[in-house]
Image (cartoon, rainbow, N blue to C red; front, side, top):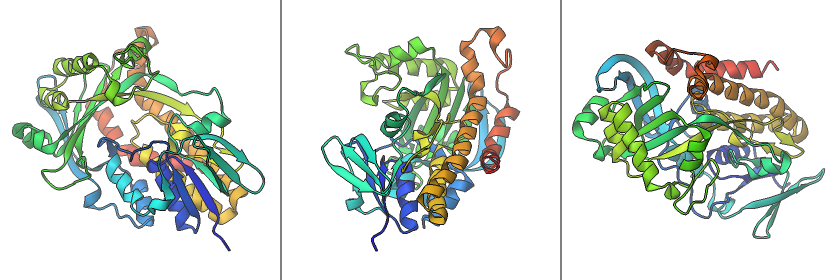
Length: 412
C-alpha cells in the first residue's frame, strides 16, 4: 500500500516542521517553495521555548548547545550607556538559520523543490491538487499551507482578508562577533540587553553566526528595535529609489541608503552608545512592519493553514517558531489518531484557538508601542513607560504564557 501524500506549500521552518512531522507518522511529504534560491534568514535571532525543544527532540533533533547561545543575565542600559539594573536569567537564543538547517537536513533533496510558485488548488473527495506557475501539477491527500504571513493559499480561500498594520516596525541588525569592539564584547556579549527610549523597545542578544556557528569567536550579536512608525512614514520607508512603493514590505536590497542612514542616526541619538555602535556597524540594517492577522478558519476541505499563514502574532511572545512546531505536531497527531477529516476538524478547533490566543497576547504586549500614535487621552498607559519589573515579568514568563494559552485552547 502506498503512503498517504502531503503537499507542503512553503519551504521555511513551518513547512519543514510539517514535512518532518508528517514523515514521522508514515506519510510521504514533499515541500514546494516559490523562491528560486535557497532560503536565508540573514541570521535573524529567535527565542526558544521548552515546547519547541520538545518537538525538535521528538524529531530526533536535540536542542543542545549547538542549537543556540546561552544567556545568563539581563542588563538595562540608559541613554549614556550605564547599566542601571541587571538580573540573572536562563535563556537559549537561537537563530532562524540554525533551526532551518536542522529541519532541512532530514528532508531528501528530491522532496524539496525550489522555484515552485502556486497559482491554484483543485480538490475533491479523494484528494487535492496544487497547480504551479510552471504548469506542473502535484496530487496528494492533504495540502499544508506554510507559505507565511502573505500566504498565497490563504488568499485563494479568504480573498481580500489582509493583515492589519500595528503602527510600528522592528528594525533589525546583526554583527559578526569578530566585528564587535572588544570593550563592548566584554561588557555585553553574554547578556540580553534592553534599552528603553520613550515609547520604544530595543533588544540585543547573542545568536548563532551567519553560517549557524555557536563556537566562541564565530557567533553574532542581534538587535531588534521596535519603533512607532505612522503609516505614511512606513510607505516612505517601503518606497525604493525609483519611486515604487512596495506596500508594507520592501525587499532588503531595495531599502534606500537615506533610510538606512536615518536609522543609524536615530540609534546614535536614542540608545546606549554600546549598542548604537553595533547597530551602526551593520552595513544593512532592515525593518519589518509589525502586523496582526487572525484567520477565521484554518481548514478548507483537505487544505490546512499552518504557522503565519493562519495567524500572524506580534513577535513579543517570542513564539513564532514555537507555534509552527506546535501546529505541525498537532496536525500530524490529529490525523494519525482520527484520520484526515476528523483530524483536520480537531486541528482547526484547537490550534485555531491557540493561534488566536497568541495573536491576542501579542497585541497586549505591544499595545504600549501601538498607542504612541494615538492622542494621549486615548492611550491605555497615558504617562507610563515600560519598567524593569514589567519587562522582567514578561521575559521570564514567556514559556508559561505559551503553556497557558495552549491549555485554554484545549478547553474550547
